[in-house]
Amino acid sequence: MIYNFQILRYFSNIGKKTPKICIVGAGAAGFYCAQHFVKRIKDIQVSIFEKLPVPFGLVRFGVAPDHPEVKNVISKFFLTAEHPNVEFKGNISIGKDVSISDLTEAYDYVLLAYGANFNRKLDIPGENLPNVIPARRIVGWYNGLPEEAGLKIDFSSEKVAIIGQGNVAIDVARILLKPVDDLKETDITQHALESLMSSKIKEVHLIGRRGPLQAAFTIKELREMLKLKGCGTYWNENDFVGVESVLPSLERPRKRLTDLMLQSIKVQREQYSEKKFFPVFYKSPLEINVLNNSIRKTITLGINRLEKTDKGDTTISLTNTREMLQSDLIVTSIGYKAVTIDSSLPFDNKKGTVINQNGKIDNRLYAAGWVATGPTGVILSTMTNAFNTAEVICKEIEKNKTVWDKPGYESIRNKLNKANIQVVTWADWLKIDDYEKKAGQRCRKPREKIIDYEKMLEVAANK
Image (cartoon, rainbow, N blue to C red):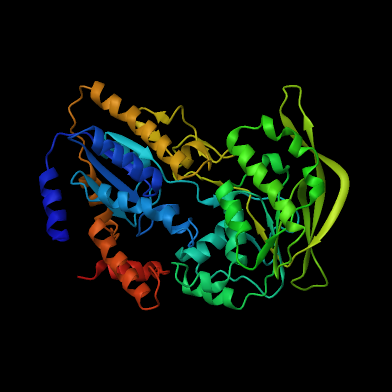
């Protein structure tokens, strides 16, 4: 029935004089934009292009395996993808297989929503040493991103340092400290599960430049760490001098998070656990050194202090005091950034975003999600941004009296056929989805993700 439906969709759209929109990126931002388009405008055609053979972006490859509830949004994405006016086209690299100019010639509107999939660097000596690994790569490794399937991580030592205090950093800390038995029934990759079974890690330090009042993790993430089986959370009480006195003046979300930290300090005085989690404040990594030509390393940390600016804001000032921390596995987690996919795009390399004004890049060229805003917020904020940008386009379509005669996907199809590129349709993705779920059933997991691009394409091509 799926295949007949796809064919019916194709023939019903031939020759239609309707606005045609192309979305680049099949992550949360792309699907939320598509959802808004088909809800607002009855006669519209939406093509979603994705570089990978599979959809959902960071919802599939970025959300922690022990957070299945966050992935529930995928059920809504399924409904959007199966709408008769929406088509998914995977395994197409925009900027390589197809240019932005190809898309603007084929579609009435082009919307970039391909996210921010590269890690920011510390730019300090020693960052490229073995076992100094970006959190983005580790997240991809345990979530089944094919390009990270072969990542080698040495878990033979007890201590880990994570540079950064966002939710990604705390996700990695939790996965490294969590009992493996609690991960066995998630969709974590089998190769990651087997490596974690032999892990010797007992201690994780989560290092941040600023203080507890500026902590970037959310209360939900912290609460999970505080309740983690067999693991205690230990704070430096000196980091909290004067914090309790400003508690009443804080906004509610920050107040609740800070109060939870203060309550946790009281508990730590009475607890002892085999595994330990240390949130560390007011410290900046300055250099990473190897000890005695081994995997053992030390991080030189500069001690910071907060200072008030003339505008009343707080800023970080590096003091002359230094501290050494030994850690054989070092994870860098200071944020993601986007990169340009086409030299024709106006791009801010420092911010890692395409240059735009409230989502608009140029005439009929737009951006939404992290490629437009930078990697900020959670899925809810991505949804809000996507809906707002999509609404701007919808209003423009309603005002425009143009005859909608762009060829849409047909002209792109011809280019891809000439290059002999295998396009993965939604029906093809459903084959991959079914294959992974059946593989997961055999080991009592929700799914076992395919971790090889060629295997994905092979499954997609099967009749």
